[in-house]
Amino acid sequence: QVHLVESGGGLVQPGGSLRLSCNASETDFTIYAMGWHRQAPGKQRELVAMITRRGGITYGNSVQGRFTISRDNEKNTVHLQMNNVQPDDTAVYYCKGADLAHDYWGQGTQVTVAS
Image (cartoon, rainbow, N blue to C red; front, side, top):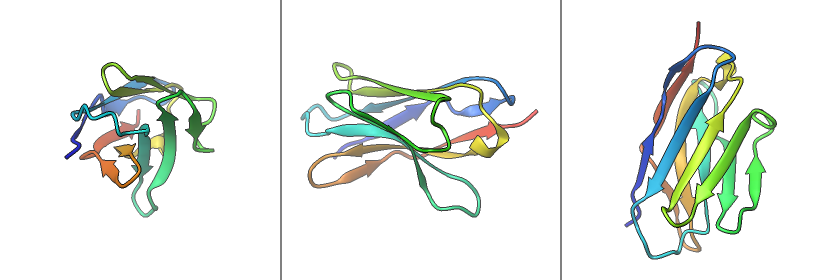
């Protein structure tokens, strides 16, 4: 079983920054991509950013240019640096890991952007 442990969510002002982290507890090296999806009230879950073990990155259109994803393969940890956050970024952010057979999801962490 892969367990994804998230940290860093919370309340932040518009224009501010927040850093999310997610650690995968398994060490079998089967996860080829990790990253983040988010779900806001009344909306479907959407891609935020994913990064492969080789460093290939995909960003969702709504966060392009503002968020940066990075990964530490030795620690099996992925980070999401969120800059210039806006109220529309308010959502539950879910860490995601993917291997050949399964998608793994973290418990979700609330990010609220408000003055």
